[in-house]
Length: 109
Image (cartoon, rainbow, N blue to C red; front, side):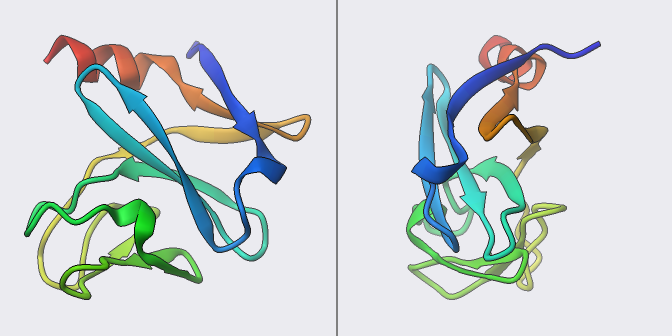
């Protein structure tokens, strides 16, 4: 069973916005959609390194602020054949929880 780490209150993440979680091996962008779904992906776009957390959230996608590639928040796949890692995230009692196992594997790499 996975262990989840409490990273923020859901209300700390604006609707159609994001917050950053900094790890030893890079940043993870945690997004909140207009209907309060949450998603977590690598913050760095693989094309030009754009900060996806600063992109425009629409539906369950985010548009890179540097080159307008659209990333699916469910899969990490973009419209331009770029891909970012996704991470398990959930909301429990109004708190956003990120899967610690994903963070441990990422840090070990």
